Image (cartoon, rainbow, N blue to C red; front, side, top):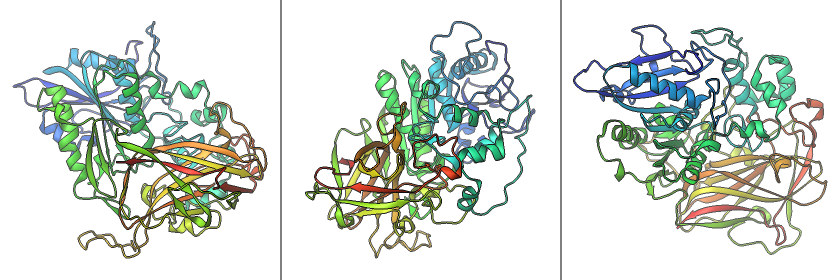
Length: 583
C-alpha cells in the first residue's frame, strides 16, 4: 500500500494463456485461508461460483488491513477520507486502489479490466473499492453491504443495539490481533441451548461487557462512547461518499436478510441520488443473508418461493454483469434497472427505477377492536394498552435455540399474537391482491407511563385457514392460518425526533413516533389478510430499553422497569402504516 503496509493476497491464475483475462477481487476481514502456495480458497469452491473458473477469471482474495495475514491496524467500517493529501491518508478505498494498481501491473496475462464483489462486510469493502475510481475498475457488486451500523445494519436498528448478534460476532471477530496470523481467535464455548434464557441471565449491555470483555473489545468501547448518532457514526455511513462513481454497480440484497436487509436498498438509493451518471442497478430476491450464493433460494423456513431462484440470478444477472464489463461479452443493456422478486406472488418483476413510479402510498389504519382498514377511524379517545416488562420480554421467535436464526425474518407470528404484551390488528379477508413495492412507514401515536420505550412494528401476511402447499413442496408445518412475517423493525422512542439528540417522553402525554422500515416487495394474495403487530421488546434480538430516559449502555438490570404503553387509533390520533401499493 502507499504507506508501506503489505496486504496478504491470494491469486488464482487460469492455465489458459491463449488470451488475456479479467481480474475479480474479493477483499475480506474473514480470512482468505488456506494460506500457502497450491492451496485453494474454499470461497471459490462452490457450484455457482465455479462459473468464474470456467470463464477463466483471475480470482483474487485479500485479507484487509489489520486482519489475519495482512499487516497494519484494523478499524471497523473505516471511514472514507475524501481529500487524501499524504501517503498516510489511507482508507479502504485507497487500499483497493493500490491493490488494483499492483495487480494490473504485476499479474501476467490480465486484460486490464478489474471487478470487485463481496457479501456483507466484504460488501462494504466492495462499496469502498467503487469509491477508489481506479481507471481499471469497471464493475463492482456490493452484495448485502454493511452500510450504516446505527440506523439499519447489523449493529443497530434505529438506534437499538442488536445485542445477540453484536455479542456473538464481536467475541470472536473483534479480539485484538497483535501480529499477522492464519488463525481465528480462540474463544471459550458457551454452554447453552436457549439464547432467551441465556441473555436474560447475562443482563444488560454493560453487565455483559463487564463479564466477558472488559475493555478488550474496541468496538464495544466505541458503542458505549457513542450512544447517539454523532459524527463518529456518520463518518462510518458508507453512503456519505457515494458521489461521482465511475465503475458500473450491481447491488444485490435479500428480502429476508436478517443482517443487512437495510444496506442493499439504501446503498442503491444513495448512489442513484448522489451519482446519477453511474450505471447502478439492483437485484432483490427472497433470500436470507447471502442466500443467492449459499442456497437454491427455493424456501426459507416454512415459506416456499419457487425453483432454483439463486441459479436464475447467477446465470441471468451476476455473471452477465461481470462478463459484459470485464470481458465485453453479452448485452447488459437488456437488463432492467431494478429486478425484484415479489414474494407472495413469487415472480420476478422488472422496473425502470426503485421504488417504482407506479406506486401509491396508502394509509392502513389501526382501528378499535383489533381491526385494520384503509378507512380513517372516526372514533374519539380510542386506544389499546399493554404492559411492557423488560424482565419478561417478547421473544423474537417461538423456537428454543442458541444461535440466532435466519428464518425468523419470515417466521410464523402466532406465538407472539397470543401474548398480552403484543397488540394485534387484522384486516378483513382481501377480495383482491395487494402488492407492496417500496419502504414502509410506521406512524404511531403513543403515550407511556415512563419516559422511554421501544416500538416494534411487524407487517404480517395471514394465510387462509385451509392453505396448503402442493404435495411437491416438502414443508412439514401447519400452514393454515400461518402468520408470515413480511417486515419488522424496531425504533427507540427517545430518537423519535432526532437520532442525534434523544429526548424523553412526557408521562401520559400523547406523542407521535414515526419511522421508516426497510423496503418490501411482497404481494398479499386474494383470500389472505393483512396483520400488524405492535410490541416493545424483541428479545434477545434487540437489547432491552430500560424504559426510562437513561443511557442504556451503562444501566444495570436494576434499572429495567415496566411501562404501560398505549397506542391510539382515533380521528385525532390515527396510528397508521403507510404502504407503498403497486398499481
